Length: 461
Ligand code: BGC
Image 1 (cartoon, rainbow, N blue to C red):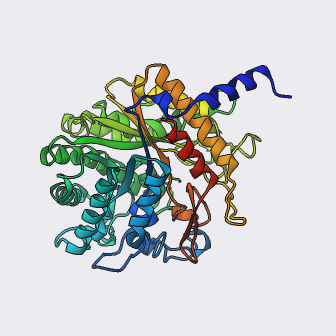
Image 2 (image 1 turned 135 degrees about the vertical axis):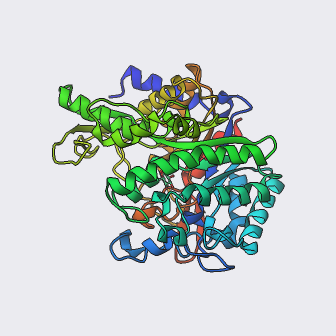
Image 3 (image 1 turned 90 degrees about the vertical axis):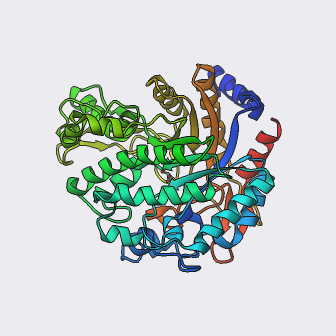
């Protein structure tokens, strides 16, 4: 039986359309170079850590590699037409560092440079506003050979890359995102070994975190200096952390996980240094940097906006067996709550709370939801992908974002993740997040029903 509250909730959701957010709200779609471009070895491109990591057996589901991915390098015109056809006005993509600087440093690859000029020009011709991510997880392999994000040279390498990109594209691109989810690539790539470059342990993680926090701010300063009228942001992953029970052990476990997942990069960016959390020796080494004034200052940057990327909340309980963190997740499936094909809990209220929480930090000028979306087990049947679960997900999350906006949060944009199904990192091609279904054998694109839903939603603006 549908309760009164549910009926109210449903009718409220149905009334929402893009117009509810006002005429200036940005609606877009996001992709990333390593996940979409393919063409990994053409036109002078160097290898990235995802090319080499994916060659190691057992690292990626099904042995998948990003070598061809969505063939975006050759099909970008078609894909941009699809973005346009669905009614989006913002297109977020990232620049492959190893296409621009095949060795990470040193010589610039003219053909790589030319590709992004063509892509940007095409966006502008179609009336799509480009949002360019400088680093979306695909470090040049040559730099990883010298330690990658753990190396003290990282700042120098990143400075060069950001300088080249700003000088090349700054006339036509005004919206810049410095890092994509620094917590994502430092934890998965340098602590847990699940993502490229597959490094583990605190000895890798802590220097990677510190270098990323420095590069995040330094990247902002470089773009500010080189690009006139730039609108500069960076993105943070966020997941509300909920204690499994109200026992003190579980509450403290949730606090530790929260410091790590939600506070580690925004607080230094806001000039507060690394998060201080009692009973959390894990971060002590980073706290030493807080004591050195120069680091607190250098990790700070006055971003014009922050990009929030929220997919799910997590529930944690105390677990003595997990090193340092002493916390482990109680999965959504175990708790029998709705979840996506990734096992991620679907909880739009939590999304609303997280948007509000980041806003309440103070010092954040504007929030753009720079990624949000869901993977489900999509099937193409007679030319149709009837992904009602994804439509429902978007409806719920967008309604939650509107509630946050009405509560006074300056949230001004929403970029759906993602355009086409693509290379989902360690999940390979198994997880489908796209609004457009991709047949990886033929590269045929089929707009899913969620894509059509978005088109109708935007049309009403
Ligand atoms: C990343 C994307 C990824 C998505 C879904 C985000 O953390 O920025 O690259 O595909 O989550 O896992």
